[in-house]
Amino acid sequence: MKQMKIQYVICFLEGQHENYSNVKTQVLLMEPLPNINKAFSLIMQQLRQHSNSRNLKVENKVLANTIERGY
Image 1 (cartoon, helix red, strand yellow):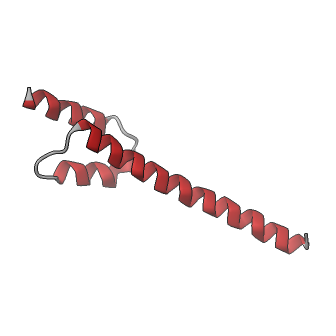
Image 2 (tube, helix red, strand yellow):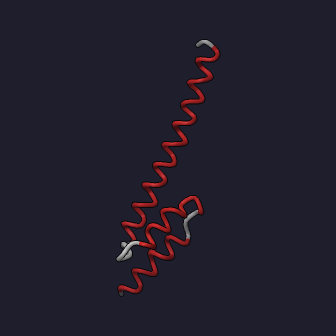
Image 3 (cartoon, rainbow, N blue to C red):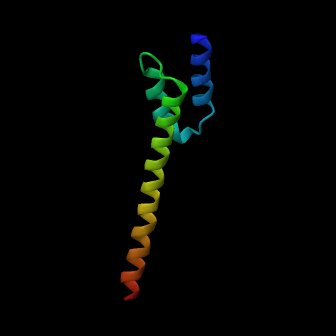
């Protein structure tokens, strides 16, 4: 049963996009290997951080364009 849970985590991580390679490596280095819920949570945390960073860049560009045009 424990081996099966480990396989679930490994399969889940292998299925993630290469953008998450840092998180995947961190999870695989954890002792003991976290359960699937924790692995999912860490991937989601990285996704939110990436999304927030991207949104901030877009907001900054919009603000810069607005100021540049004198609105």
